[in-house]
Length: 120
Image 1 (cartoon, rainbow, N blue to C red):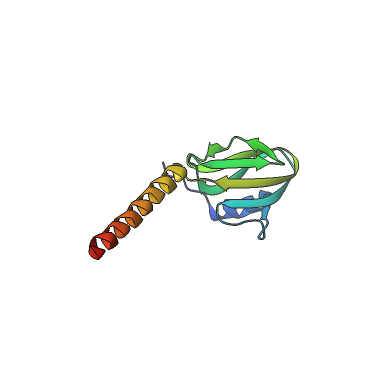
Image 2: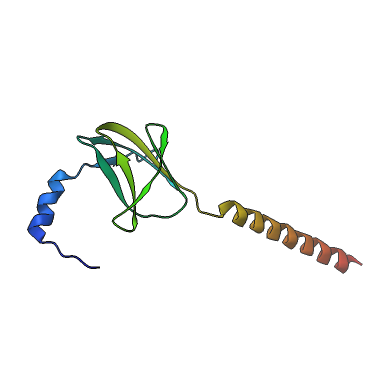
């Protein structure tokens, strides 16, 4: 589906946006930390595509992220000031690391075997 909205209406909406202030020092790699001060119950909407692997904590408590606007990651936020941490861990990351380590060990064993064969 495709929708249109007038520029004037879009401009008027930006006054209602509650900013998420991310902490540049704490935000590294797959972790984004920041604060939001909501003047009403709302939903923290991100531009991250919703997928498995996201973990969100609000004030130290894990919150279940939601799919919003049909494709993006959102988190329900109650009125007040909150600290939010969004973490992404790629699915199958552990399996990928294990397979890579196994492949590297096999590579080292092949090189050792070749060096022994050349000495004989």
